[in-house]
Amino acid sequence: MTQHLEGDWLELSTTSGGTIRVLKSAHPRARRLRLTVTPKGARVSYPHGTHPAQVSAFLRSHVDWLERKLDELNLVTKPLPALRLGYATEFPLRGETTLLDWAEGPYPKVEPYEGGLTLVIPRPHTRALPVARGLLASYFETLMRRDVARWMASYVPQLGLAPTALRIRPMKSLWGSLDTRDRINLDLALALAPPTALRYVLAHELCHLKVRSHSPRFWTQVEHLFPDWREQRDWLRQNGAVLKAELDRLVADVAD
Image (cartoon, rainbow, N blue to C red; front, side):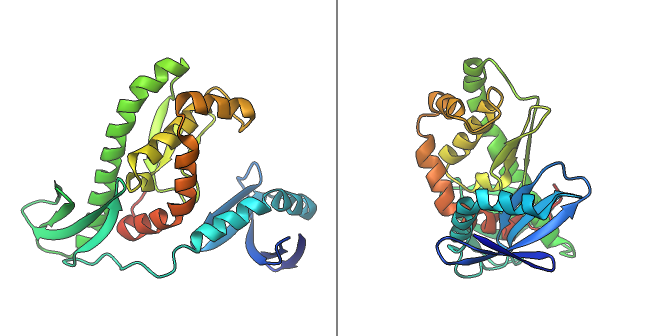
């Protein structure tokens, strides 16, 4: 892989003959090198003073991952229809195609029914779209917390460890993370995936309470807790870009 500096971009030539452009960004609060991929492209962030050779070596060590994630994003071949007040649309929810429609009522709420959701929005409609996005985000989080609470009741006794908190929010490139305070973060887009995919990500992050790395010991722990992890990991790799794009159109601009 060769590297050429172009202003704030790195242009990478891969071993397969392709070219990848990566936005580079020195961040004043960054403590380490970090590579992210979103529908807008790839980005590498790093602490001020990081030598360019270190950035190059970091990208070289992650080039296979980077190519795979960009390939996954190419699955989104056409723009999704924008969320519009009064216009019904379909989206995935818990792995099933769900109809989203609208109604007027005295106060804003989500009304689930078999195969769909109704967003009830009161008049006047001056802030209808932001209200609708907030309703959906809250509803998705509620569904995820219900599932997570049920699974945690089984997993925590097996591990003998528990996270200190659980945060659910839109995440740009990750599905989950465990921070230094043992708090688990989960991507809100997992509400759109089959519950088994969410369960895999939860098990994955819980296992980091015991093993912080992705060493063989870590994957042995995941295998013990969730034997079907490979199938769910592969499913997310194949369908993850679509899920994140769907979430973005449904709850875009909703604060974390």
